Length: 83
Image (cartoon, rainbow, N blue to C red; front, side, top):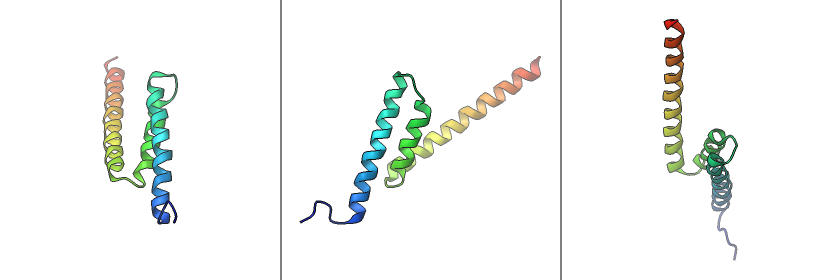
């Protein structure tokens, strides 16, 4: 008798292990020097291939990033034209 009944179950477990490992590394990089803002979304992208909750969270992170990026861009434009 095998541990994994199907290829799909085995694939899902491997993706979960890899995705959570990268996500945990990204979370530790928040306090340690490193590119946490790149590693955390990478872990979510990997997890989003198999889990719906990760896909929703990734969508939320992308939305927040776009809002902050647009805000910083418009803030810089306003400062530039005030001069």
